[in-house]
Image (cartoon, rainbow over all chains, first blue to last red; front, side, top):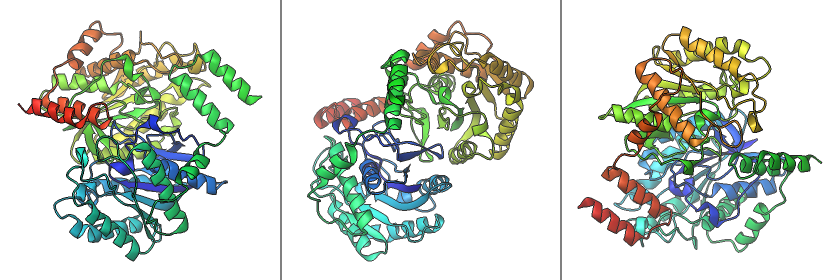
Length: 280
Length: 280
């Protein structure tokens, strides 16, 4: 089993509206719950009641398509509204992410760290010290996790920022993007993923569900090719379709029926009947 | 700030349907997220996609009513389907609960541990070793957390078990209840809370939302009086009404409006207008 750590702020946690995109149901995608693995369902990173679709879902779906025999586990540690300083190595989020990843590493190999952060540092000149602070965090994280070469994938900030709603104050987002991209180009095993053409929820700060799905495809491209993704990919929608709209396995079908039953949407008789059909 | 640890299986995590009971919105109730406190919203213990209303919400609401100056933080560590053996001191759930509680104790005092577990030990004679195994767990937990006297509140299993759906196999639940009650009567700082008259979702195993709310009231009664609650309380519905249906503070009103905006249910203009009204 392989695993991937999710850290950063709300657009890593995911705020896309669940009902706007097709569900990802894949028994080879797991998520960490109470230190152990459970089958993934969105929201993966439940830091807030408004948690929803993030980029990790389609990242993992792409990974599964290209790695047919293994499983991937997502370690959700992103925190809405967190600043870069909140992620300093002596602070709680860093320590929490290390502790969660250590639980995950009991039975998985950490193969990547996904980072998306910066909205909260897009004003007041924070970009000036962003590079150096991020450098300290990433190196400490790799050291603590005993994973000195683990790829660090950095997503850019969306062009919808600085314009409306909760994004209005993020006027220096391009300067932060410049630092993020510079970091990826200079630091080893670090890759930048553009947020170009991605759009937001009506709140002006959170990527909408379909943009998160596309972003995940780009993150996977950077991860798998060990390369920066500096412009949108032409076949994003096609890749999404292929990796998500696949025929369900028996285990996945059972999982879906079990959820319907647990939520009171089908009777026990109907549920047992469905299970019976599957075992034939 | 005070805090309370939630451990056990699904009926501690909570599977009550959210829309069946009035929402609890109280800025003095917090929940642990990424090692830090956030304002509580249900589901608190997001171990599964079917997570919903649990007993901790009304427990905390009652606590707030009787402790007007302080805040209470909930530490969600319950895991659906976990057996007593899964909670052994060398296993992940125990270690995870200790690690989460230590994050919580950075800025709070642990004042209670809420336990609900046993459905998964209600067949095959597991009740015979339940007492001794639980004893080892509780003592180790208190020791690890450096809280030797912290109250341990134990809820009983529901009488709906052993009858239908997913509860069908739990035929020895009364024998487990006997052990739980015996434990509380013999061990110091341990209290038993009956599940008598509580009812389940259609799945036959998970307490429904209103039962969870009542259960929380009973847990609080046991906690605050340091006494067993051996039969349903006459004024449960009344207490629920008083502790939940209170006038919202300005902070709570803002939180609710912010959530509506983030979910795309009101426009930015409407949101700003609402905020303006509040600051008058």
